[in-house]
Amino acid sequence: MAEQFRMVTIGDSVLWGQGLKESEKIDTLLRADFRPQNPQDVRLDRTAHSGAVIFSGSSNEAPRVGEVPGSRASILEQCAGFHDNPQDVDFVLINGGINDVGVATILNPFAPSLTTPIKEACGYRMGMLLEAVKQKFSKPSARIRVLGYYPILSSKSLTSARQLGAATSFLQLYGVALPTFGKQITVEHINPIVDRCEQFFRESTECLVEAVRRAGDSRIRFVHSGFTDDNSVFARKSLLWGVHLDPNLSPEDNVAQTRHQLCDAAFQNQNNPLALEECYRASAGHPNAAGAVHLQERIWATVG
Image (cartoon, rainbow, N blue to C red; front, side):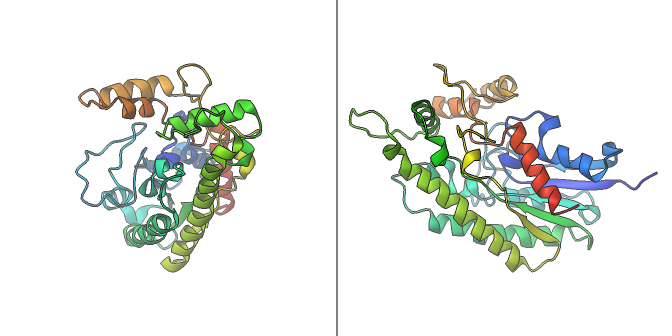
């Protein structure tokens, strides 16, 4: 009987697989890469969840799991809380940083510069996380992979009037209302937001690469997402979930109905209708099924 292979996934909604069925998630797909004949011989522990930050500070927010966004358990907490023989884990998949910066901040053209918060999240905080991961998952032959992000919106998201309307609706999900002073939305209105998305993609990649280098551990490697402008939300070859352009801006993903019920339960005692509506559409901007396959292939190329 083959020895069991062990995988652990810690991180945010990208590695949780927001909007994806279990069979479509990145780490589920990787199980079959490690044991093509017998994926059941691979034990997968996933603590990644929607909304997770790397470091939650003094937050007293109750921990969440799965599809409903919440900052805790932070990714550092996910690492610290893993006690099931971590020294026997063979493969660790990590991401994090975008929620520390804040997606709404990235998409807000009136917010301060992103450079400092990106360095704090994807540089300093990721460095803290990698030090914790090195100590927790100490098996000398373990492989540790840090997955990078992607441009949420790009110039390829805005090449038609329909795409402009879709992008405007997408921004509304994050509370971004563009003051057009009665004029029709144009590319010029959204270009500053595209610039911020590109900045986050570029600078987060640079900081994550540097954090991996500083970790000084040959077991740890950075995995570039390989996404291009063509793969952004609403682009021609998008690898990300968007929203349908119906009156309700209904989500595109495969688990929307289930998430709707989970969101209702999570927010039933809170008077926060905006957060509830965002929760219903939390898949927007996350890798779709094709995007998950793309990322799985990128990760596996650094392993196999």
